[in-house]
Length: 244
Ligand code: FES
Ligand code: FES
Image (tube, rainbow, N blue to C red):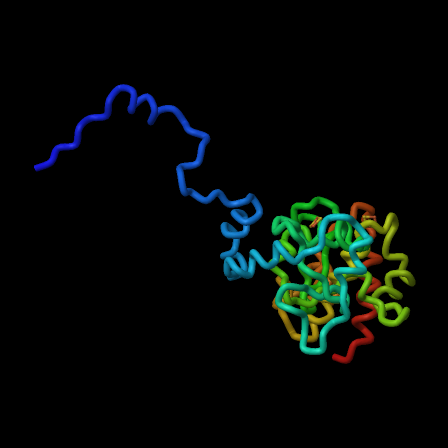
């Protein structure tokens, strides 16, 4: 039987000393690529998809990038390496750690979506993904490849305000206005939820009232100015116009 020799003192010392040199032949991944590989489970990406997303995004140079990276929405839907924002197709950002909110601000100069807490607590950054509301600060842009996103800049159609936008103005449903884009995007999604008959936490309550239902559904959107009664009034106005 072959017996392994104990390590020499010099070898033991070498093993105790942390080495900052990579072992020969070991491939060290770039930070972005390593992050991509570590997070690909989030959206079921393959390594190739992630690498493509890091290669094809716009560089971080601000608003001037919108021109070269934006293209009209292709007829057969957004490209798998792009996302559609308000009907315009954009390449995914270079850095896979870029949140959708930062992508909107830093790459596309779309500042209508607001950053409040940056932690998913306030709803100021609410946008619509395929008609459903999400917090743009809580999702990486690359997770939304191929998706259609609507921000507050895309809510009005052909210079005509969405009825909810008009109702917010009519009802004076804001003071500083910082939360308003999130409130309006959220209320647009709320309309769809009602149309789809998606229940809320109070739908089956004994003392159900439409007003309470609206408040409950809008509870993810905070308003530091306390414009809540007027916000609910505005939404109620529009929902009353909806066919039941
Ligand atoms: S900024 Fe996203 S929830 Fe507050
Ligand atoms: S209007 Fe000021 S935070 Fe809502």
